[in-house]
Image 1 (tube, rainbow, N blue to C red):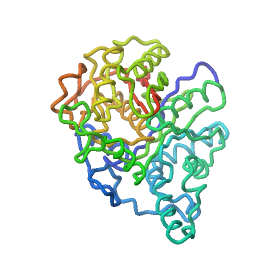
Image 2: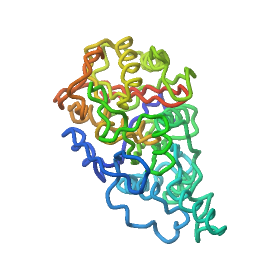
Image 3: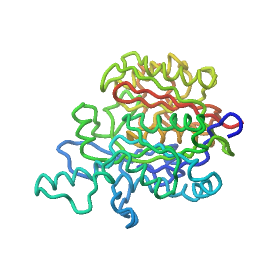
Image 4: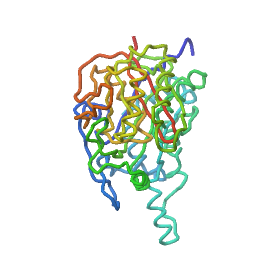
Length: 391
């Protein structure tokens, strides 16, 4: 590769409760849609979820062992990108394209019923493959086989920062000369284990997430997939500028009470990109809708960027997508730059007056050159991804 890598985003694909395509998701996010519904399975408590519509088409027969709710969602997001990936493979060579994907549940949606059958009858569910259905890297392997890619490939599972950290990995693979392009992203699907776990923590909402609102009642879990094709160089309107990563290890499940790890990640991203705080025009916040997250993240944003930068969390619309959240929100931040529109923070009105940040309660037409996407996770894993327009 000649010259310094630009890490341009040359393609993206999205699928979640807001829609089955990037365009549908983007338009719904700007409208402030909040498509919540009952989870697609019975639970002994009340909550809502952000479920993907009409997941009835199975994978092709050759890939039956991989067929889970997660892979169906992921392939719906990836399908529009397949022709471009094929062209890129023909030009670069399959060995020069890597795949790094994040997830926090893997194929648990398939493992749960298989385990119930095993417990009740002592027999394995017909056709169930732990390696192909459950494993965290099963989606990565499926994508590699479908797209005939032979570069470095692996899975990342760091809870809600998984697919944001995949972007950092892609940059390193390109900078080290191992790849000319990397397909990154993440996918997670609804399953009982996840919802029961968050209910145990006491943070699930019965009506839906309202990040940064004084009327918030907790989070709701969504499902979805997001893919970004990052090339060292090429023609594209947006590029990844930097990824700040920290681990504050304050708690297994709670953020640092002053948001110190989050603030360090934002400062690291600014430093790597050699940008000043005043050059960031929009923040897509992690914004889960819990009091702890909203309070500590607002403190981190205020401490690093000030109180006037426009902020919105899109989790009020999509639900918390867990391992798919980081890549989804980096894609939405990139679309903000491409379309000159700042998406609404669905459900934020009335904004909590104790939070000293500028929360968007409506979509705003505004051109920005640089956007920040925050992702924070259990165990104190923090990422801050800066994307910018290609000048």
